[in-house]
Image 1 (cartoon, rainbow, N blue to C red):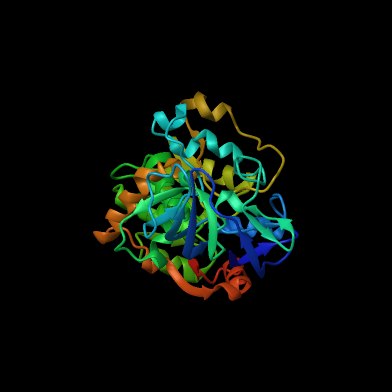
Image 2: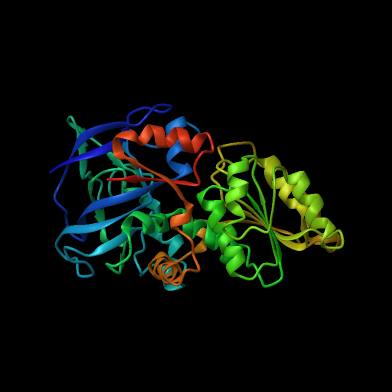
Length: 369
Protein backbone atom coordinates (compact mmCIF):
# COMPACT_ATOMS: atom_id res chain seq x y z
CA UNK A 1 0.00 0.00 0.00
CA UNK A 2 1.01 3.65 -0.37
CA UNK A 3 1.86 5.88 2.58
CA UNK A 4 3.08 9.44 3.01
CA UNK A 5 6.26 9.49 5.04
CA UNK A 6 9.15 11.72 6.09
CA UNK A 7 12.38 10.19 4.77
CA UNK A 8 16.00 11.15 5.36
CA UNK A 9 18.12 10.42 2.28
CA UNK A 10 21.37 12.04 3.40
CA UNK A 11 22.91 13.32 6.60
CA UNK A 12 23.35 16.19 7.25
CA UNK A 13 20.13 16.83 5.38
CA UNK A 14 16.43 17.63 5.60
CA UNK A 15 13.42 15.38 5.74
CA UNK A 16 11.63 14.83 2.45
CA UNK A 17 7.92 13.94 2.53
CA UNK A 18 7.32 11.34 -0.16
CA UNK A 19 5.02 8.45 -1.05
CA UNK A 20 6.46 5.12 0.08
CA UNK A 21 5.37 1.52 -0.44
CA UNK A 22 4.48 -0.54 2.64
CA UNK A 23 4.41 -4.35 2.46
CA UNK A 24 1.95 -6.76 4.00
CA UNK A 25 2.76 -7.84 7.57
CA UNK A 26 4.64 -11.11 7.97
CA UNK A 27 4.55 -13.52 10.91
CA UNK A 28 4.23 -11.73 14.27
CA UNK A 29 4.01 -8.34 12.55
CA UNK A 30 1.28 -5.72 12.49
CA UNK A 31 0.23 -3.14 9.91
CA UNK A 32 -0.45 0.07 11.82
CA UNK A 33 -1.89 3.48 11.03
CA UNK A 34 -0.11 6.17 13.01
CA UNK A 35 -2.31 9.03 14.22
CA UNK A 36 0.40 11.23 15.74
CA UNK A 37 4.10 11.31 16.51
CA UNK A 38 6.11 13.42 18.89
CA UNK A 39 9.30 15.01 17.57
CA UNK A 40 12.24 14.05 19.77
CA UNK A 41 15.77 15.45 19.74
CA UNK A 42 16.96 12.00 18.67
CA UNK A 43 15.18 12.54 15.35
CA UNK A 44 17.29 15.65 14.84
CA UNK A 45 20.60 13.99 15.77
CA UNK A 46 20.43 11.76 12.70
CA UNK A 47 19.32 14.65 10.51
CA UNK A 48 22.16 16.99 11.47
CA UNK A 49 24.83 14.30 11.26
CA UNK A 50 25.80 14.24 14.94
CA UNK A 51 24.80 10.56 14.96
CA UNK A 52 25.15 8.09 12.11
CA UNK A 53 22.56 5.57 10.96
CA UNK A 54 21.75 3.52 7.85
CA UNK A 55 20.21 5.57 5.04
CA UNK A 56 17.78 6.12 3.43
CA UNK A 57 15.65 6.04 6.56
CA UNK A 58 12.02 6.70 7.41
CA UNK A 59 12.29 8.53 10.72
CA UNK A 60 10.23 8.95 13.88
CA UNK A 61 10.10 6.85 17.04
CA UNK A 62 7.48 8.37 19.39
CA UNK A 63 4.07 7.50 18.03
CA UNK A 64 0.60 6.18 18.70
CA UNK A 65 -2.09 4.85 16.41
CA UNK A 66 -4.51 2.12 15.44
CA UNK A 67 -3.95 -1.48 14.32
CA UNK A 68 -5.13 -2.04 10.73
CA UNK A 69 -4.11 -5.64 10.04
CA UNK A 70 -2.28 -8.44 11.86
CA UNK A 71 0.05 -11.02 10.39
CA UNK A 72 0.18 -14.77 11.06
CA UNK A 73 0.79 -15.73 14.68
CA UNK A 74 -0.23 -12.39 16.21
CA UNK A 75 -2.47 -13.01 19.21
CA UNK A 76 -2.17 -9.87 21.34
CA UNK A 77 -3.62 -7.41 18.83
CA UNK A 78 -6.64 -7.15 16.56
CA UNK A 79 -7.72 -4.59 13.97
CA UNK A 80 -9.06 -1.50 15.70
CA UNK A 81 -6.85 -1.80 18.78
CA UNK A 82 -5.12 1.39 19.91
CA UNK A 83 -1.42 1.33 20.77
CA UNK A 84 1.64 3.31 21.73
CA UNK A 85 4.77 2.28 19.82
CA UNK A 86 7.78 1.55 22.00
CA UNK A 87 11.14 2.33 20.43
CA UNK A 88 12.55 -0.53 22.53
CA UNK A 89 10.91 -3.85 21.56
CA UNK A 90 10.17 -6.35 24.31
CA UNK A 91 10.27 -10.09 23.63
CA UNK A 92 9.15 -11.03 27.16
CA UNK A 93 11.46 -14.07 27.18
CA UNK A 94 15.12 -13.01 27.34
CA UNK A 95 16.97 -12.74 30.65
CA UNK A 96 16.40 -8.97 30.81
CA UNK A 97 12.67 -9.17 30.14
CA UNK A 98 12.40 -11.98 32.70
CA UNK A 99 13.98 -9.63 35.24
CA UNK A 100 11.51 -6.86 34.42
CA UNK A 101 14.20 -4.83 32.61
CA UNK A 102 12.49 -4.89 29.23
CA UNK A 103 14.22 -1.66 28.18
CA UNK A 104 17.35 -3.83 27.84
CA UNK A 105 15.61 -6.58 25.81
CA UNK A 106 17.95 -8.51 23.52
CA UNK A 107 15.79 -7.49 20.55
CA UNK A 108 17.39 -4.08 20.90
CA UNK A 109 20.41 -5.51 19.08
CA UNK A 110 18.43 -5.11 15.83
CA UNK A 111 17.51 -1.45 16.25
CA UNK A 112 20.31 0.09 14.17
CA UNK A 113 21.05 -2.75 11.76
CA UNK A 114 19.00 -1.36 8.86
CA UNK A 115 16.52 -4.10 7.90
CA UNK A 116 13.96 -5.87 10.06
CA UNK A 117 15.28 -8.70 12.27
CA UNK A 118 14.76 -11.27 9.48
CA UNK A 119 17.10 -9.29 7.19
CA UNK A 120 14.40 -7.95 4.85
CA UNK A 121 12.55 -4.64 4.54
CA UNK A 122 8.89 -3.64 4.80
CA UNK A 123 9.12 -0.10 3.41
CA UNK A 124 10.39 1.01 -0.01
CA UNK A 125 10.73 4.14 -2.12
CA UNK A 126 11.39 4.30 -5.84
CA UNK A 127 12.89 0.82 -5.87
CA UNK A 128 15.00 1.43 -2.76
CA UNK A 129 14.62 -0.35 0.55
CA UNK A 130 14.05 2.04 3.46
CA UNK A 131 15.44 1.54 6.94
CA UNK A 132 12.71 1.94 9.55
CA UNK A 133 14.13 4.04 12.36
CA UNK A 134 14.24 1.93 15.52
CA UNK A 135 12.06 -0.55 13.59
CA UNK A 136 8.90 1.61 13.88
CA UNK A 137 9.13 4.77 11.67
CA UNK A 138 6.42 6.87 13.28
CA UNK A 139 6.79 9.63 10.66
CA UNK A 140 4.79 7.51 8.23
CA UNK A 141 1.02 7.27 7.95
CA UNK A 142 1.32 3.48 7.75
CA UNK A 143 4.05 1.04 8.73
CA UNK A 144 4.59 -2.65 9.37
CA UNK A 145 6.15 -3.28 12.77
CA UNK A 146 6.79 -6.20 15.09
CA UNK A 147 4.12 -6.93 17.67
CA UNK A 148 6.97 -6.69 20.19
CA UNK A 149 7.23 -2.95 19.48
CA UNK A 150 3.64 -2.13 20.42
CA UNK A 151 1.89 -1.60 23.73
CA UNK A 152 -1.89 -2.00 23.63
CA UNK A 153 -3.69 0.86 25.36
CA UNK A 154 -7.31 1.75 26.17
CA UNK A 155 -9.26 3.14 23.23
CA UNK A 156 -10.57 6.16 25.14
CA UNK A 157 -7.34 8.17 25.57
CA UNK A 158 -6.31 10.76 22.94
CA UNK A 159 -3.67 9.31 20.63
CA UNK A 160 -2.52 12.82 19.70
CA UNK A 161 -1.42 13.23 23.33
CA UNK A 162 -0.34 9.80 24.58
CA UNK A 163 2.02 9.45 21.62
CA UNK A 164 4.50 11.22 23.94
CA UNK A 165 4.64 8.05 26.05
CA UNK A 166 6.54 6.29 23.26
CA UNK A 167 9.84 7.94 24.25
CA UNK A 168 10.15 11.32 25.95
CA UNK A 169 7.82 10.92 28.91
CA UNK A 170 9.03 7.49 29.99
CA UNK A 171 12.64 8.50 29.43
CA UNK A 172 12.36 11.60 31.61
CA UNK A 173 9.98 10.26 34.22
CA UNK A 174 12.06 7.12 34.65
CA UNK A 175 15.32 9.08 34.77
CA UNK A 176 14.06 10.69 37.97
CA UNK A 177 12.14 7.83 39.56
CA UNK A 178 14.16 4.79 38.46
CA UNK A 179 17.67 6.02 37.65
CA UNK A 180 18.09 8.91 40.11
CA UNK A 181 15.91 7.12 42.66
CA UNK A 182 14.49 10.42 43.88
CA UNK A 183 13.11 10.22 47.42
CA UNK A 184 10.78 12.49 49.37
CA UNK A 185 12.67 15.57 50.53
CA UNK A 186 15.46 15.36 47.91
CA UNK A 187 16.99 18.31 46.11
CA UNK A 188 17.10 17.51 42.39
CA UNK A 189 18.76 19.28 39.47
CA UNK A 190 17.33 18.83 35.96
CA UNK A 191 19.55 20.12 33.16
CA UNK A 192 17.62 20.75 29.95
CA UNK A 193 13.89 21.52 29.82
CA UNK A 194 12.64 19.97 26.60
CA UNK A 195 10.14 17.11 26.50
CA UNK A 196 12.45 14.71 28.33
CA UNK A 197 13.56 17.29 30.90
CA UNK A 198 10.00 18.39 31.66
CA UNK A 199 9.09 14.74 32.21
CA UNK A 200 12.04 14.38 34.59
CA UNK A 201 10.75 17.44 36.44
CA UNK A 202 7.35 15.79 36.79
CA UNK A 203 8.95 12.52 37.87
CA UNK A 204 10.99 14.24 40.57
CA UNK A 205 7.90 16.08 41.81
CA UNK A 206 5.81 12.88 41.83
CA UNK A 207 8.56 11.12 43.80
CA UNK A 208 8.34 13.80 46.50
CA UNK A 209 11.40 15.97 45.85
CA UNK A 210 11.41 19.03 48.07
CA UNK A 211 13.27 21.11 45.51
CA UNK A 212 13.31 20.62 41.73
CA UNK A 213 15.80 23.00 40.12
CA UNK A 214 15.73 23.37 36.33
CA UNK A 215 18.65 24.69 34.30
CA UNK A 216 17.97 25.87 30.76
CA UNK A 217 19.19 28.91 28.79
CA UNK A 218 15.75 29.46 27.19
CA UNK A 219 13.49 31.72 29.27
CA UNK A 220 10.29 30.28 27.79
CA UNK A 221 11.29 26.79 28.94
CA UNK A 222 12.19 27.99 32.41
CA UNK A 223 8.77 29.62 32.71
CA UNK A 224 7.02 26.45 31.56
CA UNK A 225 9.02 24.34 34.00
CA UNK A 226 7.43 26.11 36.96
CA UNK A 227 3.99 24.98 35.76
CA UNK A 228 5.12 21.35 35.63
CA UNK A 229 6.71 20.97 39.05
CA UNK A 230 9.95 22.98 39.09
CA UNK A 231 10.45 25.00 42.26
CA UNK A 232 13.39 27.07 40.98
CA UNK A 233 14.91 27.79 37.57
CA UNK A 234 18.29 29.12 36.41
CA UNK A 235 19.94 29.80 33.09
CA UNK A 236 23.32 28.31 34.09
CA UNK A 237 24.54 25.33 36.09
CA UNK A 238 26.82 27.63 38.10
CA UNK A 239 23.85 29.61 39.43
CA UNK A 240 21.92 26.43 40.18
CA UNK A 241 24.88 24.87 41.98
CA UNK A 242 25.33 27.93 44.17
CA UNK A 243 21.66 27.85 45.07
CA UNK A 244 21.42 24.15 45.89
CA UNK A 245 24.49 24.39 48.09
CA UNK A 246 22.96 27.36 49.89
CA UNK A 247 19.95 25.26 50.94
CA UNK A 248 21.87 22.08 51.79
CA UNK A 249 24.60 23.17 54.20
CA UNK A 250 27.01 23.41 51.29
CA UNK A 251 26.48 19.77 50.25
CA UNK A 252 24.67 20.00 46.91
CA UNK A 253 21.85 18.07 45.25
CA UNK A 254 21.00 14.43 45.83
CA UNK A 255 20.81 13.97 42.06
CA UNK A 256 21.42 15.77 38.78
CA UNK A 257 19.69 14.56 35.61
CA UNK A 258 21.22 15.55 32.25
CA UNK A 259 18.34 15.89 29.78
CA UNK A 260 19.84 18.28 27.25
CA UNK A 261 19.92 17.10 23.64
CA UNK A 262 23.66 16.47 23.56
CA UNK A 263 25.34 16.42 26.98
CA UNK A 264 29.11 16.92 26.93
CA UNK A 265 31.93 15.82 29.18
CA UNK A 266 31.89 19.31 30.67
CA UNK A 267 28.19 18.96 31.49
CA UNK A 268 28.86 15.68 33.28
CA UNK A 269 31.74 17.22 35.23
CA UNK A 270 29.64 20.24 36.25
CA UNK A 271 26.77 18.01 37.37
CA UNK A 272 29.20 15.78 39.27
CA UNK A 273 30.47 18.83 41.10
CA UNK A 274 26.92 19.96 41.93
CA UNK A 275 25.81 16.78 43.69
CA UNK A 276 26.34 15.95 47.34
CA UNK A 277 28.15 13.02 48.89
CA UNK A 278 26.36 9.83 47.90
CA UNK A 279 24.64 11.68 45.05
CA UNK A 280 23.92 10.47 41.53
CA UNK A 281 24.44 12.01 38.09
CA UNK A 282 22.06 10.51 35.53
CA UNK A 283 23.10 10.86 31.87
CA UNK A 284 19.90 10.71 29.82
CA UNK A 285 20.58 12.84 26.71
CA UNK A 286 22.26 11.31 23.67
CA UNK A 287 25.84 12.58 23.61
CA UNK A 288 27.63 12.86 20.29
CA UNK A 289 30.72 10.71 19.76
CA UNK A 290 33.48 12.31 21.79
CA UNK A 291 36.69 11.67 23.64
CA UNK A 292 36.26 9.53 26.75
CA UNK A 293 35.32 11.59 29.80
CA UNK A 294 37.98 12.11 32.45
CA UNK A 295 36.15 10.91 35.54
CA UNK A 296 37.65 11.98 38.90
CA UNK A 297 37.53 8.41 40.19
CA UNK A 298 39.11 9.33 43.50
CA UNK A 299 35.84 11.09 44.33
CA UNK A 300 33.72 8.02 43.64
CA UNK A 301 34.85 6.25 46.80
CA UNK A 302 37.47 8.13 48.80
CA UNK A 303 36.88 11.18 50.94
CA UNK A 304 33.37 10.08 51.80
CA UNK A 305 32.08 11.15 48.40
CA UNK A 306 30.58 7.86 47.14
CA UNK A 307 29.18 9.59 44.08
CA UNK A 308 27.63 7.73 41.13
CA UNK A 309 27.49 8.46 37.40
CA UNK A 310 24.72 6.44 35.80
CA UNK A 311 23.53 6.00 32.23
CA UNK A 312 19.91 5.26 31.44
CA UNK A 313 17.98 3.92 28.45
CA UNK A 314 14.27 4.77 28.19
CA UNK A 315 14.44 5.84 31.82
CA UNK A 316 14.97 2.22 32.91
CA UNK A 317 11.26 1.75 32.24
CA UNK A 318 9.48 -1.46 31.33
CA UNK A 319 7.32 -0.18 28.44
CA UNK A 320 4.54 -2.85 28.56
CA UNK A 321 3.94 -1.99 32.22
CA UNK A 322 5.00 1.62 32.62
CA UNK A 323 3.18 3.07 29.59
CA UNK A 324 -0.11 1.84 31.08
CA UNK A 325 0.87 3.27 34.48
CA UNK A 326 1.60 6.60 32.84
CA UNK A 327 -1.83 6.57 31.22
CA UNK A 328 -3.36 6.03 34.67
CA UNK A 329 -1.36 8.99 36.02
CA UNK A 330 -2.51 11.11 33.06
CA UNK A 331 -6.15 10.18 33.62
CA UNK A 332 -5.79 11.04 37.31
CA UNK A 333 -4.42 14.48 36.45
CA UNK A 334 -1.06 13.73 38.05
CA UNK A 335 0.94 13.54 34.81
CA UNK A 336 0.64 16.57 32.56
CA UNK A 337 0.93 15.65 28.88
CA UNK A 338 -1.26 18.14 27.01
CA UNK A 339 0.57 20.99 28.72
CA UNK A 340 3.89 19.81 27.26
CA UNK A 341 2.66 20.01 23.67
CA UNK A 342 3.59 23.46 22.43
CA UNK A 343 2.44 23.07 18.84
CA UNK A 344 1.00 20.52 16.42
CA UNK A 345 2.21 20.17 12.82
CA UNK A 346 1.06 18.47 9.66
CA UNK A 347 3.46 15.93 8.18
CA UNK A 348 4.31 18.30 5.32
CA UNK A 349 5.57 20.78 7.93
CA UNK A 350 8.02 18.34 9.52
CA UNK A 351 11.06 20.52 8.81
CA UNK A 352 9.38 23.52 10.45
CA UNK A 353 8.90 21.33 13.51
CA UNK A 354 12.59 20.44 13.42
CA UNK A 355 13.57 24.11 13.22
CA UNK A 356 11.32 25.02 16.14
CA UNK A 357 12.86 22.23 18.24
CA UNK A 358 16.40 23.26 17.36
CA UNK A 359 15.69 26.92 18.19
CA UNK A 360 14.13 26.10 21.57
CA UNK A 361 10.63 27.22 20.65
CA UNK A 362 8.91 23.98 21.68
CA UNK A 363 8.69 21.80 24.73
CA UNK A 364 7.25 19.08 22.51
CA UNK A 365 6.04 19.36 18.93
CA UNK A 366 3.57 16.75 17.72
CA UNK A 367 3.19 15.75 14.07
CA UNK A 368 -0.34 14.66 13.16
CA UNK A 369 -0.62 12.05 10.45
